[in-house]
Amino acid sequence: MKTFVERAAQGEIYIRRIGDAPARMPRGFTALQPEGGHMVVGHSETGHHHVLDRSTCAVAVMDRPPEGMRILRAIVESPTPLVHLREHDTHEPILLAPGEYELRITREFDPYEKLARQQMD
Image (cartoon, rainbow, N blue to C red; front, top):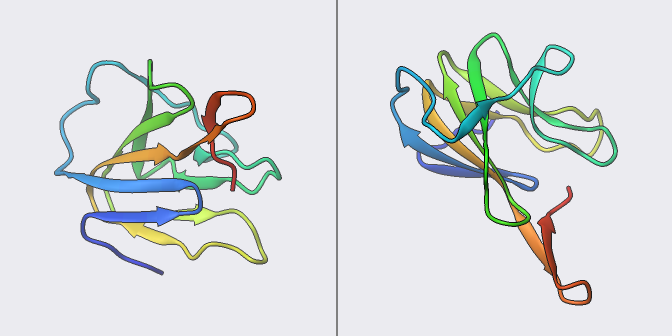
């Protein structure tokens, strides 16, 4: 399992540690609802999502992110791995220590459609 101090990435997900866990989520974020016992922070077009354990963290999504982006905040209460739900050719889990994190789904620009959209893994 990988560990990090300030920044890491897993597929299309960019992770940045903000600091110690605050008492609550900042304004402008809406709580993410669990899916199948997990907090899905990165949806995969093939169903192999990037997830956090819902029992050890709270995750919220930014209400009005820049075009084509998805920005999340995670408050991690105890060490929690970010796991890619895929049995083959998978990304190694990344351990998030207790604290607050920003997770961004990277975006790409399609010059033909002149559109920014979320990057797919």
